[in-house]
Length: 227
Image (tube, rainbow, N blue to C red; front, side):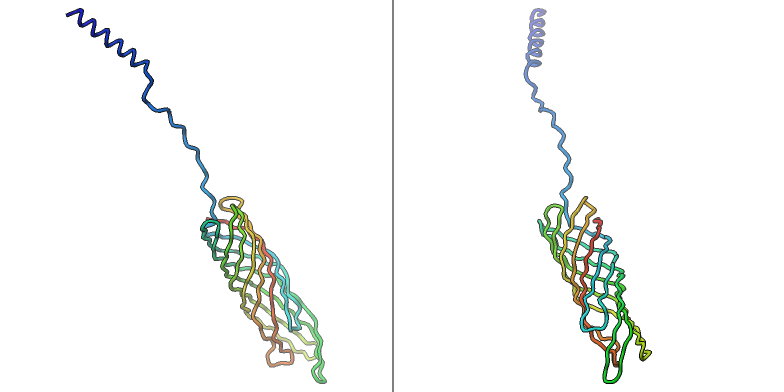
């Protein structure tokens, strides 16, 4: 009996030794997966600041072309599908555009001579944008509504006539631009907008009456923050 017990004990020990030499069935340790930054997208809400230069082109008028700087803010939202980016954008800018001029003309036997000035105080646009994204660069066209507040003044040194007229001119906005995202949240843009405005009549019912045309060329750069 003792002999049998010793034989079983030795057999168990030998089996354990052989099993220890066999390859393990446990898998190799899994290497940690690398962390990837989320893909950049133009989609989302953004706010920004902008500034630039506005040049007014007036015709059929005694006024000179108003021109000067602009500065203001921007609010917009983009949707992106593949490389196509569609969005809506609005802005409101204060304009330092003013120009003074002198005039002289005769009607019958009467001579008129004096000075006038024309200025644009505020410019706003509400537009749609359609763009094509190349990674972090966005090339876009845009169009929509434009409006501006204006102030016209005149004074005739011969007759003593003087008048000032404030008004709002509405029109369209057509343009194009490019925007580049330096980070996932911050981007910079440069754009050109052509603003053809409605005709407007000044000094109605007087010898100075005129209905003039106004187109504005607007060059701007901006910095946006996307949420």
